[in-house]
Length: 213
Image 1 (tube, rainbow, N blue to C red):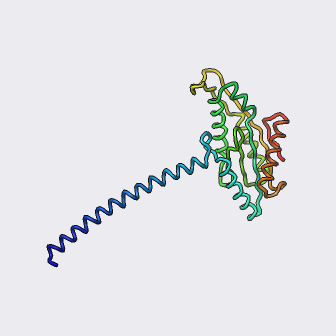
Image 2 (cartoon, rainbow, N blue to C red):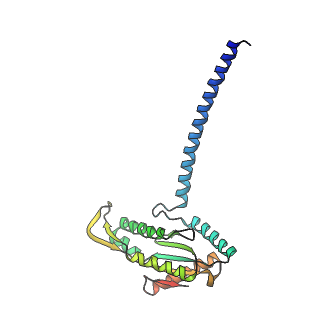
Image 3 (cartoon, rainbow, N blue to C red):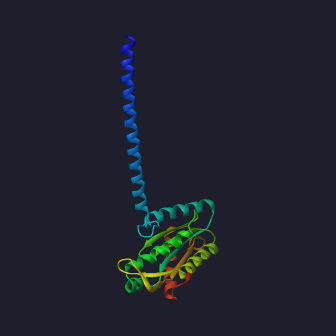
């Protein structure tokens, strides 16, 4: 093979490599875009669209993992069941846009307390759940901070088109039921049932309060 043919073959190989490089780069870009979309879909599947908190299934998966971690490390944990007081009246009197705003503001408050040892989820409707690793005093203290923080929430009532009212304001309170593994054991269903019973006890006794199972 003479030098001219060799140079021609080398040039052809360079063109082929350049083409392959372009194809690989395009595939990498496409893969990156697909991965980004899949991650967004996964996030949407795990979080509630309105509040940004975890949906029930992801919350319970994380809650089970926390209980197992506490079991291995000999630690205490608990759960809070939270319900916005008279939420139906908020929707009936001020409309669903205002009701949605109340849900979002309460969710934002719950997010302020999130950490590796404390996380929240939307249980359904106007109910939320918060799982906490800590002593009974720490869990009750967190519940009371959430309750007091909610008392301070307020905002302008929103019209049907989302326009804030000039002079009508909303406020809200919530009731909290607390259950601890120190009393109920490291059993997720039992803890949730106990916290739910404590929540209804708080509502029966006047709302805007924390009750322990």
